[in-house]
Amino acid sequence: MLIEIDDKYAIKGDRRQYMLCEKVKPTKKQADGWKPFQYYHSLENLIQNFAEMRLRESDAEGVAEVLAENKRILRTLAGALSPHFDVEIRER
Image (tube, rainbow, N blue to C red):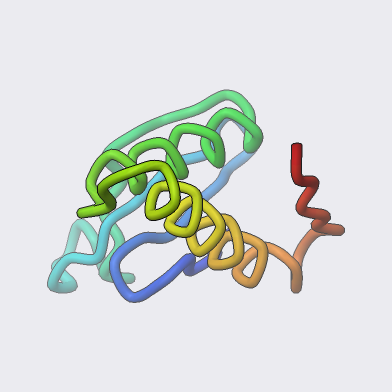
């Protein structure tokens, strides 16, 4: 399984784990151009940690910007996952 989230990150999965990958130049070892850098037992944990990581990396300042950035990240994830899974974004 390979699900591209955006041009920088993707999700890979096998029967034992899910992997968050980053785009690299294809090599013999990484022929598909995606290098795993974080490993998870559940897709839910991967998604939560990815969203938190992207939010922390953002330049958002103040509550309104953080909330807007969080929404953008969740929409990006939903767009990438929706062809493969039933995706619903719930606002709290």
